[in-house]
Image (cartoon, rainbow, N blue to C red; front, top):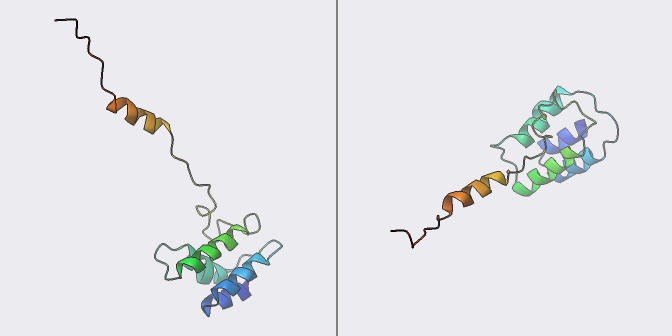
Length: 106
């Protein structure tokens, strides 16, 4: 884990990705990794190159079940993305429908 932090901080982002993917066992909580790697990767205003950020996020996803997500602040990161409910679309279609008018009534 510390090797990944080192490469991350020396702009060796893809080497950091490889280091994260090599982790096979349970990870011991590390404040250094939390503050200098995970927090910076998942930050919205991250200055990391888009491609490198995507690769780092994918590598972090491989750690699911191996790290304490609460300690690392990754609880929301590992939540599945919610799909939009199709009920909203049906309601919008109903609002756009034009009612039929019986022309024989006058």
